[in-house]
Image: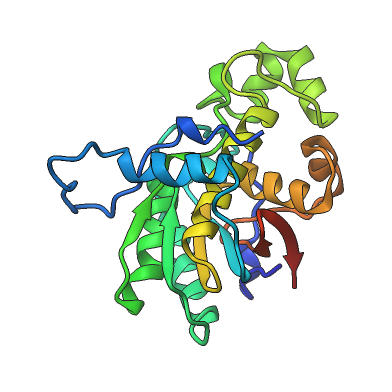
Length: 251
């Protein structure tokens, strides 16, 4: 795991493989191949994985990166599927991460489509002549009615739910559970790894999906991963090896 050397960059945020639900990812600005449906290739890969046809013969190295800071991070607002952009510090954090990764060969850069992640991914991809590719399955957990609220506001309006969340349980009672989020994230990462056998790729995402990968690697629940840490600050990097759909965290 890596964090940027600038201590300002480490800020804690407020916070089954059903591949059929995943859509095909397109680089921004690229036109879909006509006359085929946009989901045809994704369906082919996903169904092959489900049936055991696709098998990784090598190891894919996966770098999961949390996006840079937003104003909502600074204000301790729950972001979920809301779409605030990076702020000035967030853009600086992304630039520092580019320098930290300068010596590493990257084949592809994938990203959550939410702006805070996609803007971070574009900063990483551009110096390498790559295009950041948005992937819906890498989005943050949907926090439902907590979205846009600060921690203080959640504690005021939903005190019992907030206490439960602080105890590493589920807080919001709508939106998406951590388990549902983890299933879609792991399915997405497995499919991306299968496309890049033996290569190193980046996925720019959010705190929840990174904890889901850490939990899968450690064979623990998402709640336990939240309890044990580490703190997933802005532009935090976690590295994994993916072999035959199995995740292993590496230094």
